[in-house]
Image (cartoon, rainbow, N blue to C red; front, side, top):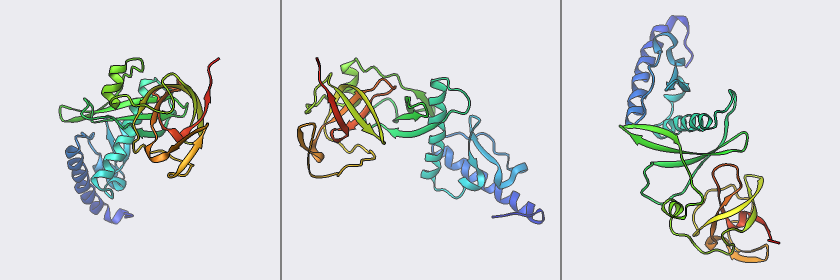
Length: 238
């Protein structure tokens, strides 16, 4: 709605109501907003969390609670990732990817934030003292017990631990070492290949729906969790 000087009082009344409404929704979502300056900015008042700008009041009041949560999470995950690598001003995140882990865990969710530099930063979301907290997640790829606790028991696949493979993910290729093998799952990826049927890749025939998944360390931060069809080549030893 566009307001003129004639109905500025009407805008302030609505802005006050919407600010209270958004604040209440966020409290239910375990998020504490900074004070909203609706008195001076009306419906264009900026909504922030720990000084991190989320959006304006006019935008957020049109969203349901799930969409408000996603909007806030995107910003807070990004800020935590940038602070982790001490990024220069102006850097930003490009991809937010949830990590499928076994439950329960000490965190409520785990995400990999891919930055403009292609660095992959793992950020965990916790609920502490009734508030959402976002922190860098320390990950030890050399600890088998740690991997099992996070992803479940190791699985058997056509590729082996230690194999060097090239993978393709979101139109980007990288080469790394397989550090863990997972059972088939519903990994969400941007696949360019058929999702069903029998396929032969690198001499290995498999059904997409039952093929293993692999955790591949490409030395760009958190390892990649990929489906077998995303492996485009294998580097032989010797």
